[in-house]
Image (cartoon, rainbow, N blue to C red):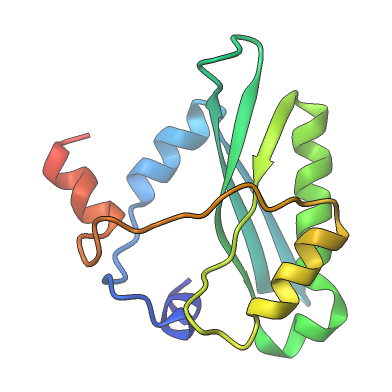
Length: 145
């Protein structure tokens, strides 16, 4: 994950929070797929599941980290990770999924937009980062979650 963080060049520190991952996973609210080559991790896609408070029987999936090593990007690894996780989430009753990609001037922006649209994605809005350099793990610790 650290290579992914460096590549994106995001302004927050890299400080994984494995204890929270375990809490989310134990609650049944984590979907994670990994791609391996000869047992070496070469890609992953993480989703966080939450209830839809406007529809008591629906769950929503929000995409977390999605990374594929550069050497494996031309082999549809990222697309396969997306397809397998979307299929799994349909099977467990997720009604809406919100994939995204960081628009930080990456050379991958156009390709990711094209991929998400080709797989049926529809642009429904924009996402803004309000907290800047605070970062999620620091915010969670500060709130004592």
